Amino acid sequence: MTATRIDIFKQMLAGDPINSSILFGLAKEYEKAGQTQEMIETLERYLGIADDEGNAFGMLARAYEKASKRDKARETYQRGIQAAISHGHPSMAEEYRMIVEEF
Image (cartoon, one colour):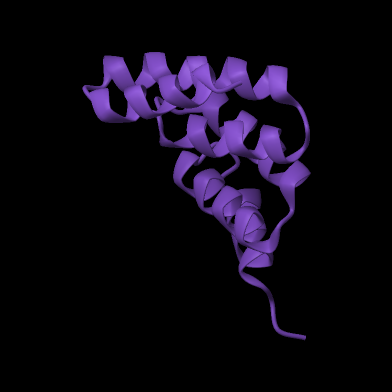
């Protein structure tokens, strides 16, 4: 049996469990596969160790929306706004603000 990209990322993560790049890559693969809960868990883990500039917060918020967890999505967008501002990404912050206003 051929290993999937998810399997490969999991194997890499087993050897380096706090590698934020591997965690982010695994989250992207879960996103592509439509595995929302796994994506949420992986992004939460990623955000616990990485200094994300805002992108992962948007991914996580959209996953929460997909999982019908609107309060968590709103909270995550708010965190993303702060991260985007602190890293000099005002357009990302504004995009997230506009989304939050539509809730």
